Length: 96
Image (cartoon, rainbow, N blue to C red; front, side):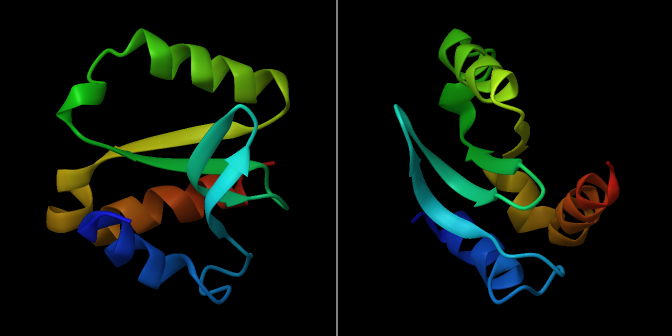
């Protein structure tokens, strides 16, 4: 895991947001950074190489077709606005 992924994982592990997350989870043909199967929520942390990535769009569509929602955050957001990232995740977990 990258340092940013480790920082976010500290906040997601052990049901700290009321649900279980897994990290670096294989979901063929991909590996997702974090996933909550109960809420069908995937969280991805991205660097600048992911800006407007057609591969990421195809990946998100793949998971959407399987009922998953994907939240993407920039690595810098975790460093500079961790509480805002967590609030966005909490909000997504509360949505039906």
